[in-house]
Image 1: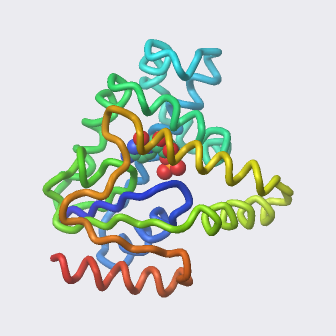
Image 2: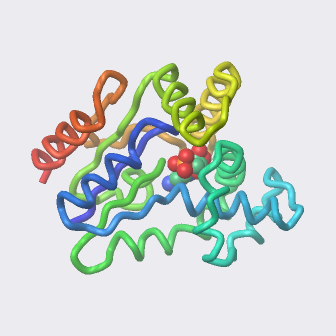
Length: 205
Ligand code: C5P
């Protein structure tokens, strides 16, 4: 059984994917972390994330980078979005994701192109979304909990820039896959969003 969860930044897709993993007893892969690892590896090597050759070279990152706290920052999220437009970078990360998806017993993957490219034959597909204002507020609260006081206007601008880049790129752009159910978490608590996600997945299985 493969469950695909796609959606934009801070939509709640990661939280929902982890809750689904616990509910169905499946392993879960946050595929954004792979693109973030490439973005961070380019930065560390002094490369240019917009230069395809530099980004591709960073795809052989050491797995230890996946445990670095900096990986979760908004700055690295933006770098990830820049390296992810390059077709060769996307291609270099495909087999790792497909191997995870096709392991015996099944898997859950969350990202931008899981239901469209990585696992188009997934047994259940969700597209999780939320308004830009709500997503920026979530990022604000996350940052505040870590003692930071981010500027709300720049958070909104970052999210909009990332949405535009992710949706308008030529290769594997973010879009709702055929057969996917839409889940808008703008006005939902985490518990309510998870309950709805389980109901939608159960109905697709
Ligand atoms: O989901 P997360 O915010 O960690 O993803 C970071 C960036 O990686 C996204 O903005 C997107 O550009 C890219 N990404 C992608 N395909 C995926 C997962 C993430 O292009 N499957």
